[in-house]
Image (cartoon, rainbow, N blue to C red; front, side, top):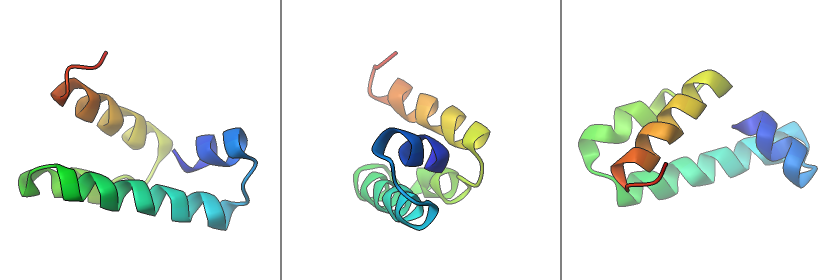
Length: 62
């Protein structure tokens, strides 16, 4: 996710990480507490992509 943000928004790595952190905190505010652990484990793009797909599925998105 960080790499994608950096590419799309032309951000350096530090700013992209801040963006990822902000998204994770936003999602934690919106999702049930039992899903927070999933968000805490967003260490790699593969994990992030899978987690985001799972979150989208919760909201009916494809």
